[in-house]
View 1 (cartoon, rainbow, N blue to C red):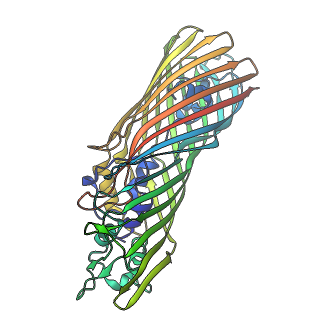
View 2 (view 1 turned 30 degrees about the vertical axis):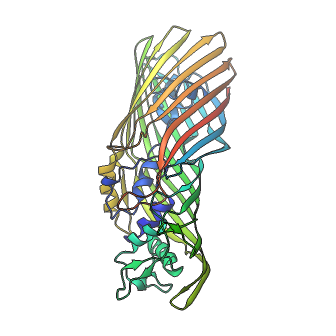
View 3 (view 1 turned 180 degrees about the vertical axis):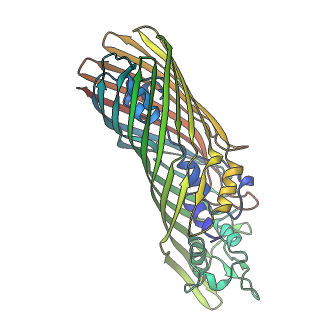
Amino acid sequence: MKLKSTLTLLSIAIALSTSTAWAQVNPESFGLYNEALTFSQTQFNGSARIQGIGGAQVALGGDISSALSNPAGLGFYNRSEFSLTPSLNFFRSDAKYDGDNNTSILSESENFNFNQLGVVINRTREESEDGFRGGSFAITLSRTNSFKNEFTYDGFSKGSSIVDFFLEQADGVQVNLLENDGAIFDSGTELLSLAYNSFLINPIDGTNDQYETFVGVEPRQRETVKVSGAQYQWNISGGANYKDQLYFGGGLGIATLNYKMRTIYNETEFIFDGQPDDFINGITLEEETDIDGIGVNATFGLIFRPVDVISLGLSYVTPTWYEINDDTFSDLSVSYNNVDFNGEILNDFNLNGRLFASNYSLRTPSKLNFGVAYFFGKNGFLTGDIEMVDYSGANLGSDDFSPTADNQTIRGLYRRAVNFRVGSEYRIDNFRLRAGYAYWSDPIENSTVDGTKQNINVGFGYRNKKFFADVAVINAFGDQSYSPYFLGDGSEPEIALDNKSTNVAVTVGFNF
């Protein structure tokens, strides 16, 4: 199973959230440590009201988003509610290739989705001797992560080709494993088999596990990457009110994920010994990765109001235990210029790889959230959250293969992160004005690229006794690093991604 890492690193690699601290990567890893981080970086999105204040909500109540972030907030309700939150997202990614001739390409896309929908059923009690004043039960569906991204880069290599990657990975692999009727099949072996059967790598005379190539280096490299999918979570939650001072609650979460990645990678205009390589016209590698999974978690929370103007919140989200299916395949096309190779004339090869399916489990890290809110009477409030999550606590398991090397990489590559969110709301009669900021720290230990993410949000809303509507505009930005393959000497191309997105969310709700 060692070679599964070759395809994983090519097709899911850089799940567009990590930087290149590869010295801490166990070389025996299958590459699933990338997925462990990608699927662990979920967020409390929620209603447009909460998004307008930067997502800071742990110490607040009376919003349907509490079902996901801190169920204790459901204890603030004194009536029932139904709401839904559609949103429209606009994405921009500027990809800059780091080769000798830098090229920057701007890609833009958009998509429509639902951030949240749900219902809250309230049961308020009159004041009683036991101090309990009722509570609420909620069923919600929330979008907790978006994988949407699309970018293209184009430039001349600084001294490597994907063929060099094939050579490194094939070193020590028996020829019979790379032939069409090879006895052992996994996704990495399949990819190398495509390279072998298209004559990109060939056995060195007198050996059956050492390889060479007649293809030149320093080609022009171009790739288009399209990523789609999201994580959602159903929550069944409840919260209660004790003397309007202590609120507590809990909930069960059923999480789903769907991740799709499509890449088309091209190499052309090869150079050999400083001259154009007339032997080969081009290489095209097309890959698809489809991942889906389902998991379960739980959330518990408290909110305490020592005085009317201050509330303190605490919530704990258990790890999510996922069962995941991963389907991957590759197609390789190589065009030669009527090359005579050992008596065989090489022209065009169009090889289709076989589908490789794997199944494994993922335990994401738990999350601990603290919040505080200060209320300016009926004029509004100021609130803030701190989130603590140790990404090195993620863990992989499988009955099909041993993920020990990936788990070792997770322990060494990732670290404990402290994220924070702040927001405010100002009230003018039935109208609301909001602003917020969110910051996610870099999850990579000793990162060489700034992996932080930031959101700057604004919003407004209108409320009366039976109806409310809120709008939020979320501006997100952050830098990322991407490489299509990795080499032992670090000569692989590195693409710097400047990502920006604008999300417009609208919540419409009814009280009953």
